[in-house]
Length: 400
Image (cartoon, rainbow, N blue to C red; front, side):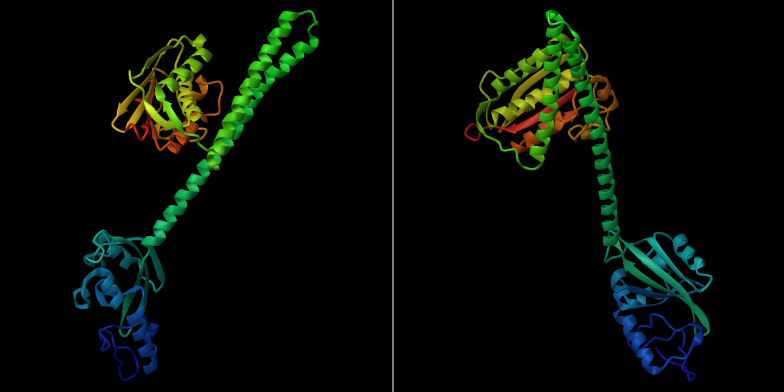
């Protein structure tokens, strides 16, 4: 930088370091020699990129060292170029638009810009703060360029977390409403049955037996609801502990299918069970494993119309065993397939077909399977096409 005889900064001149000051005084105000050195140091050591542009042409007149590093170009290679030519903006039109926006001396902040250079071939997000001011006999535009990639990534992460929390809050509200509905549905018949017991003559054995049967059934339903909630709470807080032993998966499947089909006998489902001839040994908690099969088969029974088909099969693949439960039920919409194992997730069609339950069964299945070192996934071609659930579990170590 140099000064004219009146102490004003001469436009187009650079200091011995090759840098021009980052912000010359407006309106040609005089600058003391000591101030010039401070400007020079600020310009040379700033941790933001600084560019000085010709206010008329938009061409680069000067750049500080940080800017040359950011762009991966030498100082001389930058001179005379426009912003878009050095990779700071995606196209010439956007570059010239910024220059046009600065017709009056003012600060303008641009946060939607992109820089791609030899130093950053994949590009980074940048913020550019521009200001137009008088320098010597003309006007220049000063651009401060800051890498905001991490800031934008943090903002996006914060937005994603906020969305997740909003979804979780919505699910919580839906689950509470669903729980209230289920409890009311279970308690109302109990209240009615108690009324029958109170009003019926002691000799009316038939009415008394029906009321007692109804109360027993509804109490059983309430117990299942509480059990499901306790299961979720126990798994989620790490209180569930597996008690593994050597288990033949075939016996587990037979017992689970028999239990579910007895409960759904009135639905007249056609159930096929396909098991290997040889034992399928697992190191697993037999009670939890049976719970997995019961929940999967119950899910198919709940969402398969009367007289529909359900197939349960077991097969070995190297060191793992595959359990498949397939049905001809209502199917799953494509957007819900990745969500079926989440808490309280049920589609509209599922809500209309299943009169009971909180939508916890499949979430319990996933958690138990994962505790056993396995995985579970769902497949469906869409509504009305049936569903398939596939569980993979590791075989017992001495058998694999």
